Image (cartoon, rainbow over all chains, first blue to last red; front, top):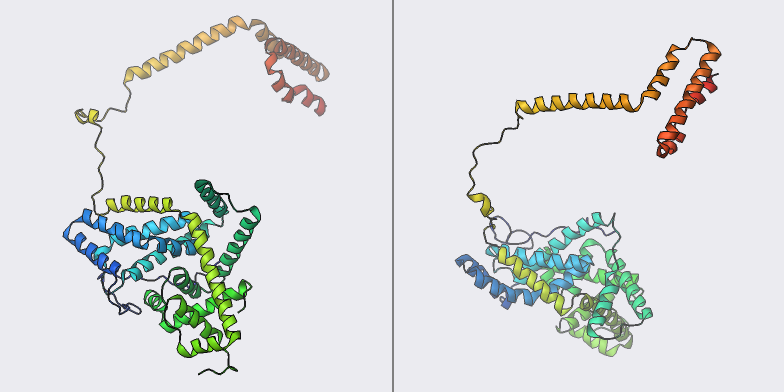
Length: 229
Length: 198
């Protein structure tokens, strides 16, 4: 079972009582605001003026921009597509519901990712309780078969499928054996395309600490998966 | 400058990989060393292969699970859900056929007195009819059941009379209700118990 003790919930900035960034790690990256950050500010202003329909329309652009990345992060956390799907939906809905508390001092990506991760951590905890009673299904095999059926292509031979499944299972088990912070940093950097600096902003950890966690996570994974450490 | 005798540490190699992946410039001394040292270059290639392999596996898996159709469906779900944000809760209207109806007061839960009287009368009538019908249809059995009470009391003779009575009852039951014989077979008989006592 994964170790949740070392993973602390990250406080979503802007969701506090005053909505202002405060505390350790609540700092911007110093870079000029990205396009999605400007878009988020625009949506916030539209919501403030009561132009909800236009705000929803603009929010669709934000969703499209971050959806793939969000799905990748959520799936790596949850290892279940239905759970990941719901976690991503919940995160976007929560962001829209609290957009009035968003401050441009935070890159939108950082703000959104923190909300997403908190949702994923909650779901992981809930699932740990649920998994005591229900055995998880092998959804990957079914999904791959469905994809090949939809494309009209031949599915890979059973041996290749089995090998791929075993490789994924080993990877999942290895990632689960990482220390909570190492896992979070590794997932955000490697699967979420975040830089150590962005992860530092999201998690409140020092940037050099993030780099150390990332390196240790990669080294441990290589050791566990039979690569050369 | 890093000498050939000092290979790059794993941590340094990893930093080079991170820099390369994020399209940032690699630390010049390390880059120079990687160019000069075939061993470190091989280690760097190993590390890159491993890390890129992890990423490629994850991408394949995500691609299998989250097809463009599914992502589109997810966007639609999000759009539907955020359409409800900021709107007042929808109130379901009261059924129109009941809107014009006037409530005159809560209906009484106490039944009227005549209902109790009618129920008592029906009970008496039912009991009386049942007794009459029973007396007409089962005269023989009734007399035979009464008969043992008039028998003189005595040890063996009493037991024998009881046996006779139970045999007759068996015969009567077998004649009238053959469908109950299965249940009857499972029921302990008085005569079995009395014989055991004896």
